[in-house]
Length: 463
Image (cartoon, rainbow, N blue to C red; front, top):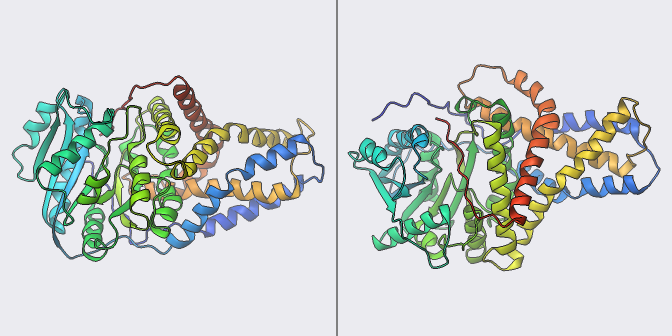
Protein backbone atom coordinates (compact mmCIF):
# COMPACT_ATOMS: atom_id res chain seq x y z
CA UNK A 1 0.00 0.00 0.00
CA UNK A 2 1.22 3.50 -0.77
CA UNK A 3 2.02 5.53 2.29
CA UNK A 4 -0.34 8.42 2.77
CA UNK A 5 1.55 11.27 4.40
CA UNK A 6 -1.50 13.55 4.37
CA UNK A 7 -3.64 11.74 6.89
CA UNK A 8 -6.56 13.54 8.49
CA UNK A 9 -7.44 13.45 12.17
CA UNK A 10 -10.60 11.59 13.07
CA UNK A 11 -13.25 13.67 14.78
CA UNK A 12 -14.43 12.64 18.26
CA UNK A 13 -17.66 10.74 18.86
CA UNK A 14 -19.91 13.79 18.70
CA UNK A 15 -21.20 14.85 15.28
CA UNK A 16 -24.03 17.34 15.64
CA UNK A 17 -23.72 21.12 15.91
CA UNK A 18 -23.83 23.11 19.15
CA UNK A 19 -26.61 25.66 19.64
CA UNK A 20 -25.48 27.54 22.76
CA UNK A 21 -23.25 29.80 20.68
CA UNK A 22 -26.18 30.84 18.49
CA UNK A 23 -28.16 32.00 21.54
CA UNK A 24 -25.17 33.87 22.99
CA UNK A 25 -24.44 35.71 19.74
CA UNK A 26 -28.12 36.46 19.11
CA UNK A 27 -28.74 38.19 22.45
CA UNK A 28 -25.47 40.12 22.17
CA UNK A 29 -26.32 41.37 18.69
CA UNK A 30 -29.94 42.10 19.60
CA UNK A 31 -28.92 44.24 22.56
CA UNK A 32 -26.80 46.34 20.20
CA UNK A 33 -29.38 46.56 17.42
CA UNK A 34 -32.15 47.67 19.79
CA UNK A 35 -30.22 50.91 20.33
CA UNK A 36 -30.78 51.72 16.64
CA UNK A 37 -34.48 50.88 16.42
CA UNK A 38 -36.80 53.41 14.84
CA UNK A 39 -40.58 53.37 14.37
CA UNK A 40 -40.26 55.30 11.14
CA UNK A 41 -41.29 53.37 8.03
CA UNK A 42 -40.05 54.41 4.60
CA UNK A 43 -39.04 52.76 1.35
CA UNK A 44 -35.65 51.79 2.76
CA UNK A 45 -36.98 50.20 5.93
CA UNK A 46 -39.55 48.27 3.89
CA UNK A 47 -36.85 47.10 1.51
CA UNK A 48 -34.52 46.08 4.35
CA UNK A 49 -37.28 44.16 6.14
CA UNK A 50 -38.32 42.30 2.99
CA UNK A 51 -34.71 41.66 1.97
CA UNK A 52 -33.70 40.10 5.26
CA UNK A 53 -36.92 38.14 5.60
CA UNK A 54 -36.43 36.50 2.20
CA UNK A 55 -33.95 33.96 3.56
CA UNK A 56 -35.95 33.08 6.67
CA UNK A 57 -37.46 29.85 5.24
CA UNK A 58 -33.95 28.46 4.62
CA UNK A 59 -32.81 29.57 8.08
CA UNK A 60 -35.85 28.02 9.78
CA UNK A 61 -35.37 24.69 7.98
CA UNK A 62 -31.67 24.75 8.85
CA UNK A 63 -32.44 25.56 12.48
CA UNK A 64 -34.85 22.61 12.73
CA UNK A 65 -32.19 20.38 11.20
CA UNK A 66 -29.66 21.67 13.73
CA UNK A 67 -32.02 20.94 16.64
CA UNK A 68 -32.53 17.36 15.49
CA UNK A 69 -28.91 16.64 14.59
CA UNK A 70 -27.25 18.09 17.69
CA UNK A 71 -27.08 14.75 19.55
CA UNK A 72 -25.73 12.73 16.62
CA UNK A 73 -22.64 10.61 17.09
CA UNK A 74 -20.12 9.47 14.52
CA UNK A 75 -20.46 5.83 13.52
CA UNK A 76 -18.23 3.46 15.45
CA UNK A 77 -19.73 0.28 14.01
CA UNK A 78 -17.43 -2.72 14.45
CA UNK A 79 -19.39 -5.28 12.45
CA UNK A 80 -18.92 -6.45 8.88
CA UNK A 81 -21.11 -6.82 5.83
CA UNK A 82 -20.76 -9.20 2.89
CA UNK A 83 -22.48 -6.94 0.33
CA UNK A 84 -20.29 -5.72 -2.50
CA UNK A 85 -19.51 -2.00 -2.04
CA UNK A 86 -18.10 -0.16 -5.06
CA UNK A 87 -16.23 3.07 -4.29
CA UNK A 88 -16.84 5.13 -7.44
CA UNK A 89 -14.49 8.04 -8.13
CA UNK A 90 -15.02 10.05 -11.32
CA UNK A 91 -12.03 12.18 -12.32
CA UNK A 92 -11.06 14.33 -15.28
CA UNK A 93 -7.68 12.64 -15.00
CA UNK A 94 -5.37 15.64 -15.39
CA UNK A 95 -1.78 15.24 -14.22
CA UNK A 96 -2.26 17.66 -11.33
CA UNK A 97 -4.99 15.48 -9.84
CA UNK A 98 -2.70 12.51 -9.12
CA UNK A 99 -1.62 13.56 -5.58
CA UNK A 100 -5.21 14.18 -4.42
CA UNK A 101 -6.55 11.09 -6.17
CA UNK A 102 -3.80 8.97 -4.61
CA UNK A 103 -4.77 10.28 -1.17
CA UNK A 104 -8.36 9.18 -1.82
CA UNK A 105 -7.49 5.72 -3.16
CA UNK A 106 -4.95 5.06 -0.41
CA UNK A 107 -7.52 5.93 2.26
CA UNK A 108 -9.94 3.37 0.83
CA UNK A 109 -7.23 0.72 0.64
CA UNK A 110 -6.47 1.37 4.30
CA UNK A 111 -9.97 1.49 5.81
CA UNK A 112 -12.30 -0.54 3.56
CA UNK A 113 -11.10 -3.96 4.83
CA UNK A 114 -12.09 -3.01 8.40
CA UNK A 115 -15.84 -3.47 7.81
CA UNK A 116 -16.30 -4.79 4.27
CA UNK A 117 -15.79 -8.35 3.05
CA UNK A 118 -16.27 -7.42 -0.62
CA UNK A 119 -15.32 -4.05 -2.03
CA UNK A 120 -13.83 -2.48 -5.12
CA UNK A 121 -12.50 0.91 -6.21
CA UNK A 122 -13.78 2.08 -9.61
CA UNK A 123 -11.93 5.13 -10.94
CA UNK A 124 -13.98 6.52 -13.83
CA UNK A 125 -11.99 8.63 -16.27
CA UNK A 126 -11.82 9.60 -19.92
CA UNK A 127 -9.99 7.82 -22.72
CA UNK A 128 -8.09 11.06 -23.39
CA UNK A 129 -7.16 11.70 -19.74
CA UNK A 130 -3.59 13.02 -19.30
CA UNK A 131 -2.83 10.81 -16.31
CA UNK A 132 -4.54 7.64 -17.54
CA UNK A 133 -1.31 5.66 -17.91
CA UNK A 134 0.05 6.91 -14.58
CA UNK A 135 -3.12 5.89 -12.73
CA UNK A 136 -3.06 2.47 -14.37
CA UNK A 137 0.62 1.95 -13.63
CA UNK A 138 0.30 2.97 -9.98
CA UNK A 139 -2.75 0.92 -9.01
CA UNK A 140 -3.39 -1.78 -11.62
CA UNK A 141 -1.66 -4.43 -9.49
CA UNK A 142 -4.17 -4.04 -6.67
CA UNK A 143 -6.90 -6.68 -6.92
CA UNK A 144 -9.55 -4.29 -5.56
CA UNK A 145 -8.76 -1.58 -8.10
CA UNK A 146 -10.66 -1.17 -11.36
CA UNK A 147 -10.23 1.48 -14.05
CA UNK A 148 -13.39 2.39 -15.97
CA UNK A 149 -12.43 4.28 -19.13
CA UNK A 150 -15.12 6.30 -20.90
CA UNK A 151 -14.62 5.98 -24.69
CA UNK A 152 -13.96 9.21 -26.54
CA UNK A 153 -16.96 8.70 -28.83
CA UNK A 154 -19.42 7.66 -26.11
CA UNK A 155 -22.64 9.65 -25.99
CA UNK A 156 -25.71 9.30 -23.83
CA UNK A 157 -29.27 9.26 -25.11
CA UNK A 158 -29.85 12.85 -23.94
CA UNK A 159 -26.35 14.03 -24.95
CA UNK A 160 -25.25 14.68 -21.38
CA UNK A 161 -22.02 16.57 -20.77
CA UNK A 162 -19.00 16.30 -18.55
CA UNK A 163 -19.40 14.44 -15.25
CA UNK A 164 -23.02 13.46 -15.99
CA UNK A 165 -21.82 11.71 -19.14
CA UNK A 166 -19.07 9.83 -17.28
CA UNK A 167 -21.41 8.75 -14.47
CA UNK A 168 -24.01 7.54 -16.96
CA UNK A 169 -21.34 5.46 -18.69
CA UNK A 170 -20.37 3.99 -15.31
CA UNK A 171 -24.02 3.15 -14.63
CA UNK A 172 -24.32 1.33 -17.96
CA UNK A 173 -21.01 -0.39 -17.22
CA UNK A 174 -22.40 -1.77 -13.94
CA UNK A 175 -25.59 -2.90 -15.67
CA UNK A 176 -23.57 -4.77 -18.31
CA UNK A 177 -21.76 -6.64 -15.52
CA UNK A 178 -24.96 -7.51 -13.68
CA UNK A 179 -24.03 -5.19 -10.82
CA UNK A 180 -27.37 -3.38 -10.70
CA UNK A 181 -28.89 -5.48 -7.92
CA UNK A 182 -30.31 -4.71 -4.49
CA UNK A 183 -27.40 -6.31 -2.62
CA UNK A 184 -24.74 -4.13 -4.27
CA UNK A 185 -24.06 -0.57 -3.11
CA UNK A 186 -22.21 2.32 -4.74
CA UNK A 187 -20.34 4.86 -2.64
CA UNK A 188 -19.62 8.07 -4.57
CA UNK A 189 -16.52 10.16 -3.94
CA UNK A 190 -14.87 13.14 -5.58
CA UNK A 191 -11.25 12.74 -6.60
CA UNK A 192 -10.10 14.88 -3.65
CA UNK A 193 -12.38 13.45 -0.92
CA UNK A 194 -10.76 10.72 1.14
CA UNK A 195 -12.46 8.40 3.62
CA UNK A 196 -11.75 7.59 7.26
CA UNK A 197 -12.58 4.75 9.60
CA UNK A 198 -15.85 6.54 10.42
CA UNK A 199 -16.82 6.61 6.73
CA UNK A 200 -16.44 2.89 6.15
CA UNK A 201 -18.06 2.03 9.50
CA UNK A 202 -21.11 4.16 8.60
CA UNK A 203 -21.39 2.50 5.18
CA UNK A 204 -21.44 -0.97 6.72
CA UNK A 205 -23.81 0.11 9.50
CA UNK A 206 -26.31 1.57 7.04
CA UNK A 207 -26.27 -1.48 4.78
CA UNK A 208 -26.75 -3.87 7.70
CA UNK A 209 -29.50 -2.04 9.60
CA UNK A 210 -31.14 0.43 7.22
CA UNK A 211 -30.40 -0.75 3.71
CA UNK A 212 -33.69 -2.62 3.36
CA UNK A 213 -35.66 0.55 4.06
CA UNK A 214 -33.55 3.50 2.89
CA UNK A 215 -31.99 3.30 -0.57
CA UNK A 216 -29.71 6.29 -0.30
CA UNK A 217 -27.68 7.92 2.48
CA UNK A 218 -25.76 11.19 2.52
CA UNK A 219 -22.97 12.04 4.95
CA UNK A 220 -21.08 15.20 5.91
CA UNK A 221 -18.31 16.89 3.94
CA UNK A 222 -15.35 18.09 6.00
CA UNK A 223 -12.42 20.12 4.68
CA UNK A 224 -9.20 19.78 6.72
CA UNK A 225 -7.33 23.06 6.66
CA UNK A 226 -3.93 21.55 5.96
CA UNK A 227 -5.12 20.36 2.55
CA UNK A 228 -5.49 23.90 1.17
CA UNK A 229 -3.00 26.75 0.91
CA UNK A 230 -5.63 29.49 0.70
CA UNK A 231 -6.72 30.96 4.04
CA UNK A 232 -9.76 32.59 2.41
CA UNK A 233 -10.91 29.43 0.64
CA UNK A 234 -10.61 27.16 3.66
CA UNK A 235 -12.40 29.67 5.88
CA UNK A 236 -15.13 30.03 3.23
CA UNK A 237 -15.66 26.26 3.22
CA UNK A 238 -16.56 26.44 6.92
CA UNK A 239 -20.20 26.68 5.89
CA UNK A 240 -20.23 23.29 4.16
CA UNK A 241 -20.16 20.86 7.14
CA UNK A 242 -22.76 22.95 8.97
CA UNK A 243 -24.95 23.03 5.87
CA UNK A 244 -24.89 19.22 5.82
CA UNK A 245 -25.86 18.99 9.48
CA UNK A 246 -28.67 21.53 9.19
CA UNK A 247 -30.32 22.20 5.82
CA UNK A 248 -29.36 18.94 4.12
CA UNK A 249 -30.10 16.99 7.29
CA UNK A 250 -33.61 18.50 7.41
CA UNK A 251 -34.47 17.08 3.99
CA UNK A 252 -32.40 13.91 3.80
CA UNK A 253 -32.85 12.66 7.36
CA UNK A 254 -36.05 14.28 8.67
CA UNK A 255 -38.21 14.48 5.54
CA UNK A 256 -36.29 11.51 4.10
CA UNK A 257 -36.63 13.12 0.69
CA UNK A 258 -33.64 15.15 -0.65
CA UNK A 259 -35.59 18.02 -2.21
CA UNK A 260 -32.53 20.30 -2.12
CA UNK A 261 -30.44 17.73 -3.97
CA UNK A 262 -27.44 15.72 -2.85
CA UNK A 263 -23.66 15.90 -2.91
CA UNK A 264 -21.63 13.84 -5.35
CA UNK A 265 -19.43 12.62 -2.51
CA UNK A 266 -20.07 10.80 0.76
CA UNK A 267 -23.12 9.44 -1.05
CA UNK A 268 -24.20 5.82 -0.63
CA UNK A 269 -26.70 4.52 -3.19
CA UNK A 270 -28.16 1.07 -3.76
CA UNK A 271 -27.00 -0.02 -7.19
CA UNK A 272 -30.37 -1.04 -8.62
CA UNK A 273 -31.87 2.28 -7.51
CA UNK A 274 -29.09 4.27 -9.16
CA UNK A 275 -29.55 2.28 -12.36
CA UNK A 276 -33.28 3.03 -12.34
CA UNK A 277 -32.60 6.79 -12.16
CA UNK A 278 -29.38 7.26 -14.11
CA UNK A 279 -27.30 10.38 -14.64
CA UNK A 280 -28.39 11.31 -18.17
CA UNK A 281 -29.43 14.89 -17.42
CA UNK A 282 -29.23 16.57 -20.83
CA UNK A 283 -26.97 18.76 -22.95
CA UNK A 284 -26.38 21.66 -20.57
CA UNK A 285 -23.84 22.02 -17.76
CA UNK A 286 -25.98 20.90 -14.84
CA UNK A 287 -25.56 20.00 -11.19
CA UNK A 288 -25.62 16.24 -11.71
CA UNK A 289 -25.71 15.34 -8.01
CA UNK A 290 -28.56 17.77 -7.27
CA UNK A 291 -30.44 16.52 -10.33
CA UNK A 292 -29.99 12.94 -9.14
CA UNK A 293 -31.30 13.92 -5.70
CA UNK A 294 -34.42 15.53 -7.15
CA UNK A 295 -35.06 12.57 -9.43
CA UNK A 296 -34.69 10.29 -6.42
CA UNK A 297 -37.18 12.46 -4.52
CA UNK A 298 -39.68 12.09 -7.34
CA UNK A 299 -39.27 8.33 -7.70
CA UNK A 300 -38.52 7.21 -4.13
CA UNK A 301 -40.02 9.73 -1.66
CA UNK A 302 -39.33 8.96 1.99
CA UNK A 303 -36.44 6.61 1.19
CA UNK A 304 -33.33 8.65 2.05
CA UNK A 305 -31.29 8.62 5.24
CA UNK A 306 -28.29 10.19 6.93
CA UNK A 307 -24.79 8.73 7.03
CA UNK A 308 -23.13 9.62 10.38
CA UNK A 309 -19.63 10.06 9.01
CA UNK A 310 -17.35 12.43 7.14
CA UNK A 311 -15.41 12.47 3.93
CA UNK A 312 -12.32 14.64 3.92
CA UNK A 313 -12.00 16.97 0.94
CA UNK A 314 -9.74 19.83 -0.06
CA UNK A 315 -10.79 23.46 -0.33
CA UNK A 316 -9.69 25.32 -3.48
CA UNK A 317 -6.00 26.19 -3.64
CA UNK A 318 -6.54 29.87 -4.48
CA UNK A 319 -9.22 32.54 -4.25
CA UNK A 320 -9.39 32.49 -8.06
CA UNK A 321 -10.18 28.76 -8.00
CA UNK A 322 -12.76 29.37 -5.29
CA UNK A 323 -14.52 31.95 -7.46
CA UNK A 324 -14.45 29.59 -10.43
CA UNK A 325 -15.93 26.85 -8.25
CA UNK A 326 -18.75 29.06 -6.93
CA UNK A 327 -19.39 30.36 -10.43
CA UNK A 328 -19.75 26.81 -11.74
CA UNK A 329 -22.09 25.89 -8.87
CA UNK A 330 -24.46 28.72 -9.68
CA UNK A 331 -24.42 28.02 -13.44
CA UNK A 332 -25.13 24.34 -12.89
CA UNK A 333 -27.83 24.90 -10.27
CA UNK A 334 -29.54 27.59 -12.34
CA UNK A 335 -29.52 25.36 -15.42
CA UNK A 336 -31.07 22.62 -13.31
CA UNK A 337 -33.69 24.97 -11.90
CA UNK A 338 -34.70 26.38 -15.28
CA UNK A 339 -34.07 23.49 -17.69
CA UNK A 340 -33.90 20.44 -15.40
CA UNK A 341 -35.63 17.25 -16.61
CA UNK A 342 -38.13 17.29 -13.74
CA UNK A 343 -41.63 18.63 -13.02
CA UNK A 344 -41.63 22.24 -11.76
CA UNK A 345 -42.74 21.31 -8.25
CA UNK A 346 -39.45 19.48 -7.72
CA UNK A 347 -37.41 22.47 -8.90
CA UNK A 348 -39.15 25.31 -7.06
CA UNK A 349 -37.14 24.96 -3.84
CA UNK A 350 -33.92 24.89 -5.84
CA UNK A 351 -34.95 28.00 -7.79
CA UNK A 352 -35.74 29.77 -4.51
CA UNK A 353 -32.29 28.85 -3.15
CA UNK A 354 -30.57 30.23 -6.25
CA UNK A 355 -32.54 33.49 -6.03
CA UNK A 356 -31.66 33.79 -2.34
CA UNK A 357 -27.97 33.31 -3.14
CA UNK A 358 -28.17 35.96 -5.88
CA UNK A 359 -30.05 38.40 -3.63
CA UNK A 360 -27.35 38.42 -0.95
CA UNK A 361 -25.62 41.22 -2.86
CA UNK A 362 -28.48 43.60 -2.11
CA UNK A 363 -28.89 42.38 1.47
CA UNK A 364 -25.36 43.50 2.28
CA UNK A 365 -26.30 47.11 1.50
CA UNK A 366 -28.18 47.23 4.79
CA UNK A 367 -25.11 46.13 6.73
CA UNK A 368 -23.04 48.88 5.12
CA UNK A 369 -25.64 51.51 6.02
CA UNK A 370 -25.79 50.23 9.61
CA UNK A 371 -21.99 50.45 9.98
CA UNK A 372 -21.94 53.99 8.56
CA UNK A 373 -24.71 54.99 10.95
CA UNK A 374 -22.84 53.46 13.90
CA UNK A 375 -19.78 55.54 12.93
CA UNK A 376 -22.02 58.65 12.83
CA UNK A 377 -21.11 59.21 9.20
CA UNK A 378 -24.77 59.28 8.20
CA UNK A 379 -28.02 59.80 10.05
CA UNK A 380 -30.38 57.20 8.69
CA UNK A 381 -33.33 55.56 10.42
CA UNK A 382 -33.33 52.06 9.04
CA UNK A 383 -34.18 49.42 11.62
CA UNK A 384 -37.82 48.91 12.59
CA UNK A 385 -38.77 46.75 15.63
CA UNK A 386 -39.61 43.60 13.60
CA UNK A 387 -36.51 44.23 11.55
CA UNK A 388 -34.33 44.39 14.67
CA UNK A 389 -35.22 40.87 15.80
CA UNK A 390 -35.10 39.42 12.30
CA UNK A 391 -31.78 41.01 11.40
CA UNK A 392 -30.17 40.12 14.74
CA UNK A 393 -31.21 36.49 14.35
CA UNK A 394 -30.07 36.28 10.71
CA UNK A 395 -26.77 37.99 11.50
CA UNK A 396 -26.19 35.67 14.47
CA UNK A 397 -27.25 32.61 12.50
CA UNK A 398 -24.61 33.10 9.80
CA UNK A 399 -21.86 33.76 12.33
CA UNK A 400 -22.87 30.58 14.15
CA UNK A 401 -23.18 28.70 10.83
CA UNK A 402 -19.58 29.45 9.86
CA UNK A 403 -18.16 29.04 13.36
CA UNK A 404 -19.55 25.51 13.71
CA UNK A 405 -18.13 24.43 10.37
CA UNK A 406 -14.85 26.11 11.18
CA UNK A 407 -14.65 24.05 14.36
CA UNK A 408 -15.32 20.80 12.49
CA UNK A 409 -12.76 21.53 9.78
CA UNK A 410 -10.21 22.64 12.38
CA UNK A 411 -10.72 19.50 14.44
CA UNK A 412 -9.95 17.17 11.50
CA UNK A 413 -6.95 19.26 10.45
CA UNK A 414 -3.28 18.79 11.24
CA UNK A 415 -2.86 22.52 11.85
CA UNK A 416 -1.88 23.50 15.38
CA UNK A 417 -3.46 26.97 15.43
CA UNK A 418 -5.89 27.23 18.40
CA UNK A 419 -9.53 27.34 17.36
CA UNK A 420 -10.27 30.56 19.26
CA UNK A 421 -7.78 32.43 17.06
CA UNK A 422 -9.51 31.17 13.92
CA UNK A 423 -12.92 31.97 15.39
CA UNK A 424 -11.88 35.56 16.12
CA UNK A 425 -10.64 35.94 12.55
CA UNK A 426 -13.77 34.41 11.02
CA UNK A 427 -16.20 37.27 11.80
CA UNK A 428 -14.35 40.09 10.01
CA UNK A 429 -13.29 37.72 7.24
CA UNK A 430 -16.89 36.62 6.65
CA UNK A 431 -18.40 40.08 6.41
CA UNK A 432 -15.52 41.91 4.74
CA UNK A 433 -14.04 39.26 2.44
CA UNK A 434 -15.80 35.89 2.27
CA UNK A 435 -19.36 37.20 2.00
CA UNK A 436 -18.55 39.60 -0.87
CA UNK A 437 -16.52 36.88 -2.65
CA UNK A 438 -19.40 34.40 -2.39
CA UNK A 439 -21.70 37.05 -3.85
CA UNK A 440 -19.17 37.79 -6.62
CA UNK A 441 -18.97 34.10 -7.51
CA UNK A 442 -22.75 33.96 -7.67
CA UNK A 443 -22.95 37.06 -9.88
CA UNK A 444 -20.31 35.62 -12.21
CA UNK A 445 -22.33 32.43 -12.43
CA UNK A 446 -25.52 34.33 -13.17
CA UNK A 447 -23.87 36.17 -16.06
CA UNK A 448 -22.45 32.88 -17.37
CA UNK A 449 -25.95 31.38 -17.27
CA UNK A 450 -27.43 34.37 -19.13
CA UNK A 451 -24.72 33.95 -21.77
CA UNK A 452 -25.72 30.28 -22.04
CA UNK A 453 -22.17 29.06 -21.43
CA UNK A 454 -21.62 25.34 -21.96
CA UNK A 455 -18.00 24.97 -20.83
CA UNK A 456 -16.99 22.89 -17.82
CA UNK A 457 -14.27 24.25 -15.54
CA UNK A 458 -12.29 21.96 -13.28
CA UNK A 459 -10.25 23.57 -10.53
CA UNK A 460 -6.88 22.23 -9.46
CA UNK A 461 -6.94 19.58 -6.75
CA UNK A 462 -4.75 20.26 -3.71
CA UNK A 463 -2.86 17.19 -2.58
